Length: 307
Image: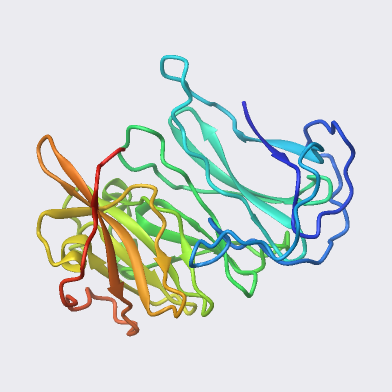
């Protein structure tokens, strides 16, 4: 198995040196208040700055498995793992890979001793890949948790600290469209980036489309607001370039400090060559369930494709 070792948490509670792996029978420790770690890179700018100092990295408070069936190729573990998040009450929420070919659940554990608070299965399906891409969860400032599901859906748990409260789903292209043809969307639409959430609770992510579908979706970028309303734009429209066919796998969207510009890596894929582009695009603020109009062509920066 692959393990997560917890050595320093926001407002971390007790834990002894050399602590062993936790089990579901460990009663969660009392909450400890402190600053939250919301997502990959902590915030929508991916600044990765913590408001508190780290604890001693030589001491492991507790550990838990994050991959129940790791697979290796030529002795190498070709898997990316999602970043845990930490609530302001010191609940650590982490994705757990459950099968060799995919399958995930989300666990919430006490930051103090690793005791399990709640666990939720997901129906998320991995997109086509070489390396296994990461599966990520993300928190809002109001402690609402989002994690990806099949067909481009998002699963939502309104209080990440609370065991009660069943998760619900939102769909950026409309629940009605998904419910009319779930198998078609599950087989062709895949969230393929970490989630990024801004201060207003808007969720941004990239998605990959591999086949025609009833909603006419093409690979691109989506936004879901705090009320569950979604908009999306294709990668080609965002870049004003039909050669750009998808967003870059595993590359989390980032917002500018003034939260007015969304930055994403786009992928140009031709037969045997490719390039990546760093795209800066003004945000769309309406909540229509349709593709926004194309923005003026942005400046781009090219570098090599290394996935």
